[in-house]
Amino acid sequence: MASVSCISGRDELNFIHLCNPHLEKMQEDILYHFALGTGTHDLPALFGDVKFVCVGGSPSRMKAFITYIAGELGLGSPGSEHPNICAGTDRYAMYKVGPVLSVSHGMGIPSISIMLHELIKLLHHAKCSNVTIIRIGTSGGIGLEPGSVVITRKSVDATFKPQFEQVILGKSVIRSTDLDEQLAKELMQCSKEINEFNTVIGNTMCTLDFYEGQGRLDGAICLYTKEEKLQYLREAFESGVRNIEMESSVFAAMCNLSGVKGKVATLLKL
Ligand code: R2B
Figure (cartoon, rainbow, N blue to C red):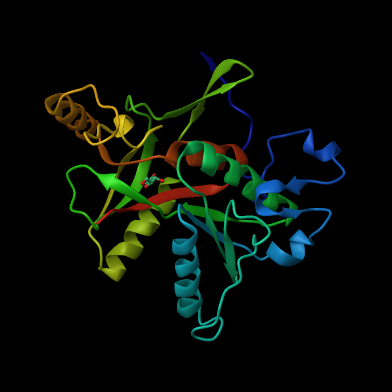
């Protein structure tokens, strides 16, 4: 297996780093799944002030989130509608209030990965600086009450390794899934101040499938026993895993390579 590390990190001005030399040579960059592009939209004017991007699976939740944020920031009148910036496509939905962008990413690594490629390019073209991206999705928990919040320390794969593996040009490439530690502490502090949710910092296991991949017994196919499932979940818990979802590994890997502060905080489904 090849291990690749692209030199990245935040540069001194904390702009978004595009880990792709080919883009510079292109006349126009079309962000297909957002229905936006450098040739058709003034991205710096539309998005240049963005400092926080919150991403989550469902379009309706991300719309509800931006409405909540508008209220918290005192921006926009109560009850006012927030237009979907990506109305030209039904792939993803995007909303903006002041410096906060709220974007849906669908379910699973392939879906969030397409969205993140285009989001990172958008933030770069818009000349955004010091951007923090937080995934605020849902997940299943291990050993925690439903309704708890898990702030991800490390995203691990289904064998509990902190890595994201992708096949690129027929070769396996392993990328780091480290997340910003300081941001985890800050989010934990926020949760203490709000004092509304049981919140823990723990490892998040990112799987490729919702049913067999997460040891469920109710999929169309299941060829293991309940005891084998419980043994696997015990091992996961002992390795530090506190929740399971399907996006955090590629999220962490892509934030790292682009020099973006990234964090995952997921609410355990009720
Ligand atoms: C959590 O919930 C979804 C599956 O129901 C998936 O996107 C995830 O990570």
